[in-house]
Image (cartoon, rainbow, N blue to C red):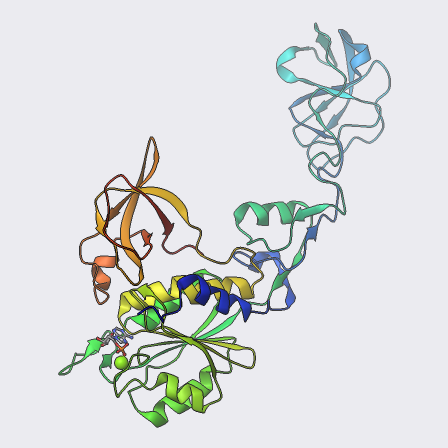
Length: 399
Ligand code: AMP
Ligand code: MG
């Protein structure tokens, strides 16, 4: 067993083969979840003009306290028709352009209003309730840096700064192929010896959430020519992810046929549980992940290898699962030879994250795994890790 590649070495071999995809202009309306390939810069100052923060009156601070004639009206989108002169006031609403000549806004609550004038009893500070032009960002400055995944706040900032198109990494095209003569589609009646095909859908959902453009291919039987045709098709993608057929059985054909098609195998088998028989290879720019067929092994292999590759292809800087500190709620026995990834639920207490390992940790138990929101990383070694001991873990299903 000691000849197995370590997880860290295997992940490094994967990331070493990733070349970030080129950028393309994406309309901001379509850019949710995309990753910037260059910094996006403001097209305008924001605010684009000195803007009132309150409903009230635009004034010169030097004129207050006092009684001022109201000589005009400013509403959002309707600036004043002339500058404000000394000794004058104009009504103004939130978001209105503070007129030239005015330096402050007095909120309506601090004013006694007459027909054509106002009375202000207190002084105001110069600049009060005026949002200066460019106070949020100046035209030409960076709104969102490079290698950032665009979420709601980033998209709002881009739109506010007038950005209509943003340069993002092309989405990685991922082909997903399930292999196995026993696989039936949900909706069909199970025949003798059949199980429902679940990995294709699961891997598609996981990698789509990470930003990939997915093609789920029809599952193939354990048949050489079917494998040859399907793998060749999948090799046109940026990433080909297969499930099943990478173990040592006579019907495990994926590695053999991939090699015949010119895939250079970078590694096969990693010291992890579940997911040991995972393979990784490359043909030209295509990355090929052979995930084991047991559904939980497929899931773990996806989180540890395929998803980081999809992130790195988009230019994200820390593509590996983000390990966090936590404590175990109940003891776990270590595996002597392999790093184990234990399905768990987490909650927070006053000291941080607490990880509760689930029952049913076998690699075929996808339904048991479906209530997990965390994977605990249990490094290989002897003995038990006790309840309360520190462990590393990461969230399942991160983009
Ligand atoms: P394999 O890795 O091909 O030896 O498959 C290991 C186990 O996973 C077998 O019990 C398969 O029936 C099961 N399996 C393989 N592929 C899938 C799949 N796509 N969906 C659900 N189970 C699968
Ligand atoms: Mg199989």
